[in-house]
Structure formats: structure tokens, C-alpha cells
Image (cartoon, rainbow, N blue to C red):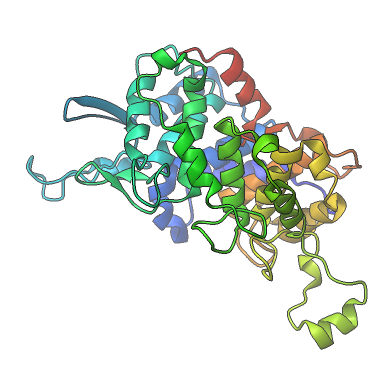
Length: 399
């Protein structure tokens, strides 16, 4: 098995923090997400070696993405995903609409990056948890077929805008956790979200085959399954008391997302399955009959960890899973991981590959003896942050 190329991965993340290739210019609207993947990737590698001055300067950069607005008689606070959106007036006049939209995912990425930078946003005057939760609660749908779900932004008219799916439920509940809103008494939660309706929304997306999907009665997807399961966990859902048989079906469905073929591979490949690819073995896919993809290694196995603890990870072939990432999707030239063995690396797949390797190393009672593994830190599977950042949240952040 190839070694984990720690030094190259460190250089790759630092390169992405400084500049991105021209073909990634379209990702400027996801700048806070890219920063999150790179900063927490370095943190997992034990290479987040910023000086106190750098930490403060980088934290100020994140704080500069905050939006404070008054809507009606209510004040809200959120983050924008990129400073590009601060250029918010199309014609430069005070009467033109603002396209600097308060963004749910950016608010999550902003807060969670501040954790890695050891910025105690609970003690400064830049963050107001009630204003942020007012913003989050405004995005939750109060009626209709998607009642309980969330949309991703407040639109130009400052009403919920965009598609409604499980990803936004997950980020909303993560924000609630990062602000420790769930630890307040009910009377102190001025702008809490409706937990009962969000659990109903999520439960309605459980597929008959196991897993969760974007809409009722549609095909389940590994990424959405993680978002749904993690969101249910963050909402305090009782998996044992409410499971019927869907939890067992979901575990079975997740395990079968690991790509494998019968032992008679030659005849199988040539006679029965033209698209057989030996490099795909050990990886995980997002849906039935799809090829492996680096990120699904995380979405599938982290879902198993949330549902079953370490025992859930005993159900996969961990050696094949490690080999798929290290031998196939790890870029040996510049570092980072691509979505597959033929794709240029990117920050999302690079971070989720390291997160997967970290979780397997620290949760599975099997050998993980490749060079470089000793430098991988622990990962929190629910918030998808390093254990150091989770400790900072638990022990330092007081709001």
C-alpha cells in the first residue's frame, strides 16, 4: 500500500489557501467552504502551525464575512460565502436590491473555521447567537409539503430562497450546536428552530430500501443519507425507539455501497459486466450501480459510525477501503486526493479522504501501518472537525 504523503498534502492545502488554479475561479462563491476544507485538513495532519498573530489575522478575515441586517423589526446575523458578494448593489444606487445574501452554509463554514483558528467567538462582540438563530429560523419552512425543511439563503426580498433538502437541515442543526443553543433552557432560546417538524421532514425522506433521499419515494443517496442521519442525531432523535426496521435496512444499504466484484473477476468483467474496473474495488459509491468516489468513503462510513459506533466500521473491508484511497485517488505528484484515480485533486475530496482515514485508523481494530498514518489526528464524525476543534468547542466556547 502507498504511504500517506503527509508533506505533499500539507503543501497542497497551503497552496489552495493562497491561490487556486484558473479552472477553479468559479468556486469563488464557495470560498469559506474551501477555507474550511483546507484549514481542517491541515489540522487533521497536525500541520496547522499558525502563529498567534496569524490566527488573529485569519480569524479577522473570517469575521469580515459577517452580514448584520435589520429585517422589519428583527435583527439577524449570518455569513456571506465570499467577499465578492459584498459588491451588492447592481447599479450602485441605494434603491437597487441587495444581492449580498445571508447564507446558511457559509454561516456554518465561518463558525467551524473559527474553531480551528482557536477564536473564541463566544466571548467577543462580533457574534450574536440569538441573531444568527433568528436568521436560521427564518429559513425553516413553516408549512407545505416541505414543512420543517430549510432553504439555503434569504433571497433578494429576504424570504427563504432555493431548493429544500437534507443538506440544509444538517447545516442548520450544526449551527445550533456550534452556538450551543441546544444547551440553553427553553425559555432562553429566543429564536429556536422547530425540532419536531425537522425530524418529521427527515423521517419522510427515509427510503424503502434504507438510506435517505432528497424527496419522498425517490432513490437514496449516500451524501444525503449522512446529512439526514447526522441531522437526526443532532436533533436528539431516538434511533432505537423510532427505528422500526429502517435503521437495519440503512446499515445494510450503506455496507453494500462498498464496491466489490465476485472472485472470478476475469470472466465477470468480460462476459457479465463490461464496466468492471479493478481500481474501483474498496471504494464506496453514492447510489446503486455507480463507480466509487473518494467522498463517499466518508459519507458511507461516517453514517455507519453514527448509527452503530465503532461496531459499524467492522462491517466494511477497511484494508480495501484504505488501499482505494492511498493507491488510487491520492495524487502522488502534488498531494491532495481526487474524486477518483483520473481526476485532479480538490480540497473537498482531499479533506474527506483524510477524514475517512483518520476515522478508520482510530475506530477500527485492524492494522493501519502505512507510513504517515501516525500523524493523522482524530475526527469528530458528527460535526466533521478535528478532535482538537471539538475540544475547543466543548471546553472554551461559552456563549
